[in-house]
Length: 118
Image 1: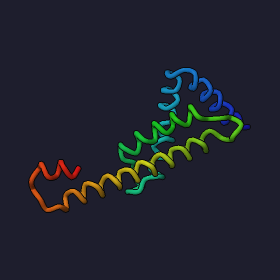
Image 2 (image 1 turned 60 degrees about the vertical axis):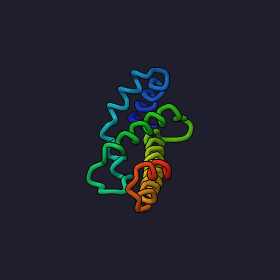
Image 3 (image 1 turned 45 degrees about the horizontal axis):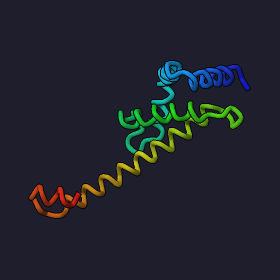
Image 4 (image 1 turned 90 degrees about the vertical axis):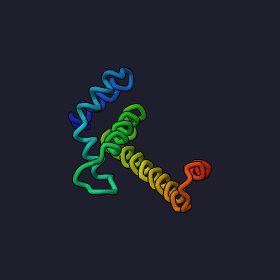
């Protein structure tokens, strides 16, 4: 294990036990989190949207809490968790948009009808 990997593993272990340290670790790795969010976006890869960044931050925290040093590199694990959560987010959003589109295709302007359909 390289010195850099060893250093982050120590920080992750400390962050598991202390929420303030977890917050500091997330702040320290925000450029990494933004980069991973941008890599895993379905839209323009130039800049991650705020929603994807929020999802990536929660995923990074989830990775901190679920990391097991015997399973490999933390950053590889965090990348996998971030990718999975952003994919889940996009699937959920697509289902939501399809549901709204189906309700709006009803052709009725009556708000009560829309509410009943929802």
